[in-house]
Amino acid sequence: MDRNEQINKNVLAARAESEALLTSLVDKKIGKLRRRKQIQSYIISTILFLTFSALAFYLGAWFATSKGLCIG
Image (cartoon, rainbow, N blue to C red; front, top):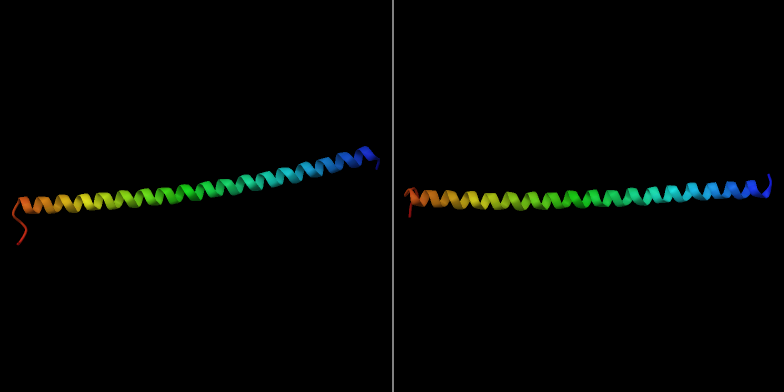
């Protein structure tokens, strides 16, 4: 094997290694973004659930007191 063939072989090996590393880094970043989006959606759905639960409780209490259904 002459010198040029060895250089080409080393360049191809380095290119394959760098592509694999870049792919790995991109996959990790995508995984982190996906996890962050899941956490954000969980927090938003929890806040919405608590907000609508409080609103339903308030409206139920208001309706009950306006109709004289409360004792006290």
